[in-house]
Structure formats: C-alpha cells, structure tokens
Length: 195
Image (tube, rainbow, N blue to C red; front, side):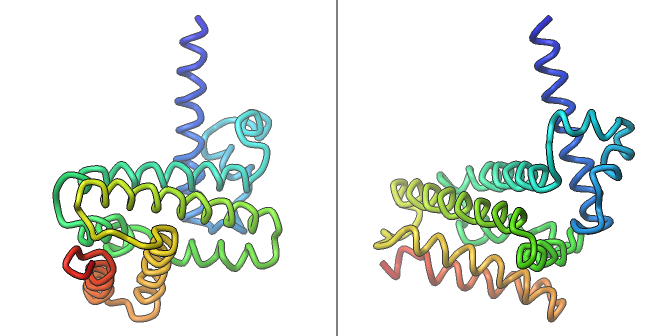
C-alpha cells in the first residue's frame, strides 16, 4: 500500500508542475494564482498546498525540473555530437516560438520587487552555475572540450550567453541568427583548438 501512495504523490506532483507551467505561460507568473492552478487541475487550493506552500516554491520546483531535463538532453554530448550545437538545442522551445521568452524576463522583473521570487531566482542561478560547472568538468574529462582554467567563470559565461541569446531573440525576432551567434560564441569559448 505505501508504494501506491508514494507513486500517487509523485504523479500528483508531476501533474501540478505541468499545470503550473501551462498556467504561468498563459497568464504570466504575477497574474497566475494558486487558485488558478488548483482549478485547472480540479482540486482545492488546500490540496495544492499539501505539495507546495507558495507560488515561489512551485516556481523553484519547475526550475529544478527544467534543469534536470536540460542536463538529460545534454548527456549524449559527453560522448559524441557537437557540444556547441547540443547546448544551443536546449533553447529549441524558444527558437521555435513554442515558449515565450518574456516569461523569464517577467520573473527577473518580479524578482526586483519580490524578495521571495528573488531568493528563488538566486538559488536557481547558483544551481545552474553548479550544474554547468559539473557538466563542463565531465566534458573536459572526456576530452570533448578544451581544458578550462576557471570552470565556474566559464559556466557563468555560458549561462550569460544563453540569456543573451534569448534577449536577442526577443528584441530582433530572428531565431536562426540568434542561434548561429550562440553556437559561434560557444565554439569560441569551448573549442579544443583554442586551448
């Protein structure tokens, strides 16, 4: 019986996260409420609060899930494939127009006035830098990229490139150009020939 309950909780949590992502995408983080999310799932807000006490806690879980998905998509690059192209592929939802990059910028703006959202965004950034640093280390160990003198700084630069690419796409609306510039920058930064 406990296994069934644990599995139910995992599925319920996954359903909440998927619904929250959809509601945040549709309404924006600020406008979306826990009531909107609960209503779309068909449960009470109280049931939702059993899993996530605040909207910011829900946001944190969504960011963690997204990080895991991106890292999983990059896993094959440890052994084969073009590293720069593979990293750029993680923005395919943005390049294709499936995901509005304005959502991320709304969160950045919200973080300027909401200390809880700022805390979540800061934690997410720290986790992104750590995950990227660990990933770069694995790529180095496999000889897939050049040896890096300061892996944490390179991780921060790559994250800045990803964010900059999204901003460029928002401003200019040329996905192919934005992607090309990102790949070129990543190759410049990571190419073994530069080492």
